[in-house]
Image 1 (cartoon, rainbow, N blue to C red):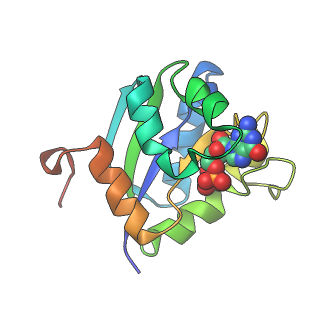
Image 2: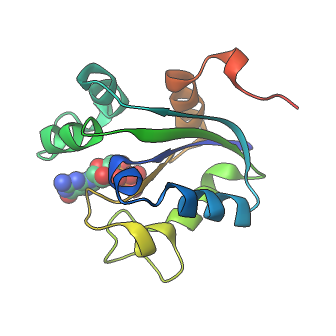
Image 3: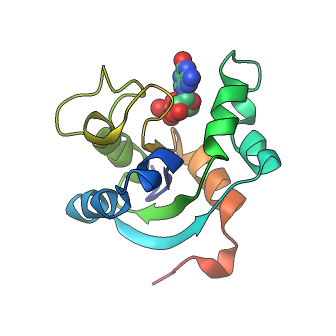
Length: 140
Ligand code: GDP
């Protein structure tokens, strides 16, 4: 069990003006933001981030969406962070997300689902390192 996870406020949520509302959820859920930045991914970055999905039929559509506008990438800290953030964001498909979750409130489709959350401690560390240098992460 690790205390760090990686999150993205995806381009749909940024475009729809929901960045601040997702930040409120992060704070309400007692995560500490240990790094954050606004950026727009280029295609190699998005393809690298979602490399595990490259054989999936939606890969092209997904990487186009993720490069379509700015997104907010964050490193979050909390006890059992990966599981806690997955619970806060809800199911991938907003139709299956339970009431009160971030995706239930802000996602518009299975693809444009507002936020990302790492699915394991190992991936959380990889994803944080994919976007942040060590010196960009708060350590106290
Ligand atoms: P997550 O861990 O809940 O984000 O879900 P996955 O790792 O399975 O998928 C990664 C991302 O791909 C999701 O968050 C969606 O943005 C997108 N995605 C997943 N399934 C589908 C699908 O069936 N169709 C489309 N268009 N996008 C999908």
